[in-house]
Length: 466
Image (cartoon, rainbow, N blue to C red; front, side):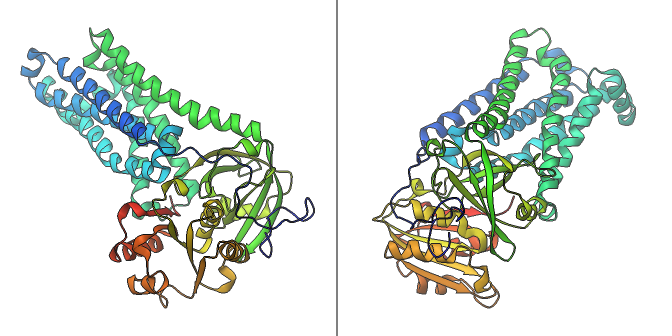
């Protein structure tokens, strides 16, 4: 969009004025909290069934034998940790009923919170089983470890899987993750699936709880198969189907600000794409060096069939390469995802805060809000040139008779603390607050809003990062 007009390329269609009315697309489904509660209850029942199967599988004689209690504790830790790993996979399997009700940010946060427990329990399993078996055979731990690796079926594969799990866990620690490019982190986490697959055979064929208990083994296989099925359907099959249905192609790449470009794509049936302003897709640009990985980029405007636009800042290898995309490049998408939408709104007034390229979901959300919503928009940038989609945002705010505040300058010189936020939005406690930008910016605004009396459920964030 130039001068407040639609982002469609000049050479394809004459530009039209932005309207506050909805464009002809379907909104994303509203959140359904009952789905979250039912899923949590099902996960809890599954955990109870697994723990019961492991405990009931132990015999009095095995517990009384040398090292028996230690080995039993190791088995319990192993099955519990593995079950938590499967829950972690489900949380990031992009199940539509969870995504629309919880949002990917919160699901990823839950995934990360479970990770230390799962990795710790599986590590405890390795240690306790080795020590318990060593006591049972009256040998040293190093000797017993060698026996386990060389004599037990699928043990070597399980050990490799454990190593891959540890590698993925280390890469997820905050200080490590910040030093990794998104592409590197993404590839490392693909090995998590391989690690789980390599551990599956080890449990099925050597797990004591399964010996003489075919129903228990069948239950465990069903749990694994259901998890794998959800990953295949919602992380592979559905995105492939959606990409084939919409057949997106790049038609224009335009620079919006230093290091920031907009990619406009043309596709089919975009009026049938259920998407709301503020949501994002995982984008695969099907060209050399970019096709094999997807990056999460928010729409920077609602789709205008047959066009859809995404605005990208060059932070990693793929995002920088977006500036070199050629018209005609095919695009595959996964999504839409995210709850940074009008569905989350509780009040008739909103305050939208954005920093840098964080304006992209805010700009789309601004377009999607009902006409009667009272809007205040606060945009933060280092220089005037970094105010992405400045004219578009100003036009939309003006048409809504809202207020636009532009804060330009270094974050060290211009602090958005509670005092500053109060001066910008005096009635912030009575508004929903939407925040998008770097993690530090989001935390700063959220803290200021809470200090000024805004309830936690009125604060909605979309943080850039991984």
